[in-house]
Amino acid sequence: MGGHDLTASTAENYRAFAEEAAGRSPQYERLSLDVAREVAILDFLAGLPRAKRQPNLLYAAARYLLGVPADLESLRSLVASRGPELAHVMLSRRTQTNEPARCATLLPLLAMLPQPLALIEVGASAGLTLLPDRYSYDFAGHRVAGTDPLGPVIACEPRGGVPLPDRVPHVTWRAGLDLNPLDVTSDDDMHWLECLIWPGETGRLARLHAAIATARRGPPAVHRGDLLTDVPLLAQQAPSDATLVIFHSAVLAYVAPPQRQEFASAVRELGAVWISNEGPGVIPASAPSSVNAADAADAGDAGYSALASRYRTGCFALIRDGYGPVAFADGHGAWVHWLS
Ligand SMILES: C[S@@+](CC[C@H](N)C(=O)[O-])C[C@H]1O[C@@H](n2cnc3c(N)ncnc32)[C@H](O)[C@@H]1O
Image (cartoon, rainbow, N blue to C red; front, side, top):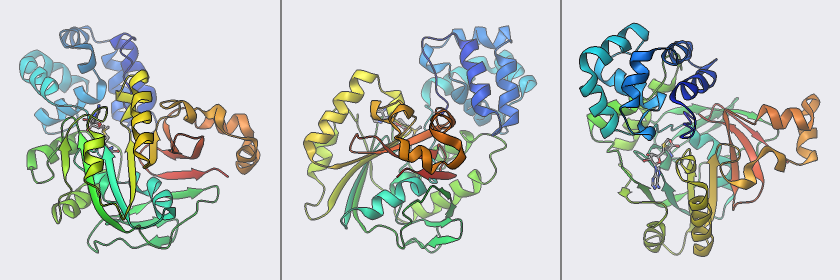
């Protein structure tokens, strides 16, 4: 989500972001179309490294400084009057959106594995997606209670015969890895996570607050490190009497394709269960073309090509051990469509 093509022009990226925001955040959809035409803002962005010109980063940094989500007028005046300050926030912060509802997508797979589990999440941000057992779930009336009675209840619409679990997985050990771990006990870091939420996405802020409160009652360890080099050392610390699961969501798009393959090989060598929740095509097996005909039938009158195109963008593919997708899912966990 918030994808950023380093080969495209900045204006093209903002127009592409407008498409992504359509239906989710009318304010950011409109703002992105405006920014794509606004010379002063494009000039400001041109002064930053390419990877720092992302819409998500600009809007979160603006919100951080303004206290409210930007519109064209407030953004224009922020760039004109506080440009260096805005650039400083953009250079020192990253897009690290941490969406606890993605745990709903992971839950059925995690619950199927031999228990107990030892979890390693790479690209864990603040570790809010490392707590699938502490949250509760509501899959269209099928409720699953988490271990934190005060934790958020994550609503997720099940589609296509999701193997819904009766209980949360039993997690005996967990660790996160991130280039830049955010600290759940830091109000400033958590405020940054709030700023990354798009205006119009109802429910996300309340869910984030509830998940932060859960995490603060027992902060998960998120270590500073690179998923390309530091997973084996972390894996050595996992208890040997638990199923080791290495997982990630919304992370590998930030890693160049050849390095994704390196990561995949390293995970395979560790003999761990590997769960990937990423945009279709981020790892090769997740391209919609790998959906089989039975799954097309599953989609009812949608048919194969409609299913494939329906899930081509704006969603994630859930993949176990690098084989074809087991499910497609909303990028923010609102629904999961299980494949046969
Ligand atoms: C969009 S956030 C996703 C956070 C979390 N997985 C979730 O689903 O809510 C992506 C995270 O990946 C981290 N990241 C990107 N490249 C990484 C790498 N090579 N090694 C470790 N972490 C990385 C970023 O710092 C960021 O915190």
